[in-house]
Length: 481
Ligand code: NAI
Image 1 (spheres, rainbow, N blue to C red):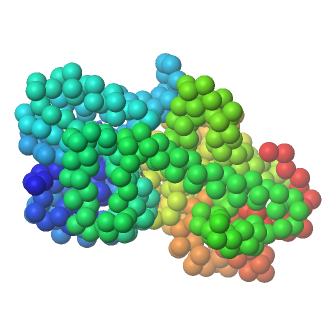
Image 2 (spheres, rainbow, N blue to C red):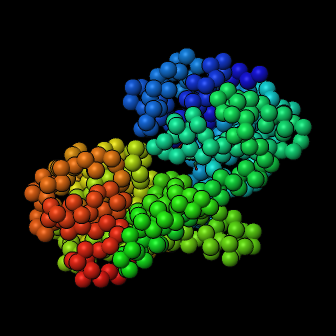
Image 3 (tube, protein in one colour):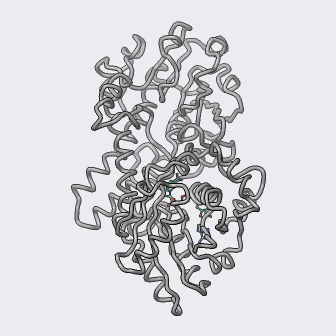
């Protein structure tokens, strides 16, 4: 009988996942621990550290009852029967494999902490997305420091998507649990399965060996990102030929072998996972002597970069090939709607390129904070080979950027608007009012196909909608991406 679960890492995965386990398993005490005092303080406050529809309700119902957030890592690890490791697994920024391989420092330190403080048998669950065979490394750390304690390591990757995390956790397409094919491993699988069976139908719980579970998560993210890059590649051809990517995606997606989801053309995918996980997959292929396979998956990230460059080139080419000193409003900065997360958001690259071209940008996002946006645009991140990132932004370029809390304020006096996130509220804006307050000609570049281009053209805008037939103005401004 599982009495207590501890989760190491109170992030986008650890927080929501444990909140839902606490809600669905009232007899289990669930404690989420983190080394970040700020994060834990926020989880214990009225302003949670992450925005997810429905999350606040779940936390409010369970917090202080059977759900706790704490920095007392040692105590809760030592008391738990099951320990989830849900720490960050970023791309390495230096050393061997830099730019592609995963930095497993946080995973390793979590494993060492478990080995240090455990006094009874534990099931250790990899929740983080990790390279195949990471469980073996965790096992070695635990077993070599075990003091006679029995540790079983399971892989239980998380498939939730930010923005719909609570719904995804309530009604998962599947829960995947991988374990050793030994009696001890199988028993551990059954124990974790029982926890999920409190709300997940049995036929949705898939059990596999450890390596299949670890690889399935990387493969799933690579397939999802590949769909986006595929439709984005087609969007470029649509613009060149007069086809409409929405119509093409619909026609393609009606084929039941393909399906309609994840076929929206856009300025590119973002978020903390897709790029990181594909590069991780690429690195794994390279390490396993499979350069052709590595090259295949690498193209998914390259097309993503191409799409961002193509978009910015279109903006600059349309606005008389010069944006210097012109105000451009950025509507949306988060990497997708219904989240405040800006990790790897395409908006970072688009804004940096425009700032480098000396545009004045005014950003509005319903959730991303000014602090976060400032950090994203000023921090020089390590890049694997992003040509568009290479030059750092000068301090004067950064001063050309403001963050506002209103779309009307952001667009006032602007020469152009870039819609970079598909927030629903951008569909409802009074575009006539916005147009009246802009410089003319007024440009609107919709990278998410949020607005109806025809309606906006009637108002007077020159509209670019990604993957859609170009209006006359744009046809005469060829783009070199
Ligand atoms: P995150 O960065 O939001 O949270 C990770 C947390 O772990 C941080 O708060 C950090 O302080 C904490 N941490 C790191 N080392 C620690 C240690 N030794 N002891 C205690 N706390 C420690 O990361 P996020 O987004 O929750 O992701 C976690 C894992 O889940 C990653 O491997 C990610 O790839 C994967 N994942 C993420 C998804 C997402 O949508 N964000 C979806 C599915 C999987």
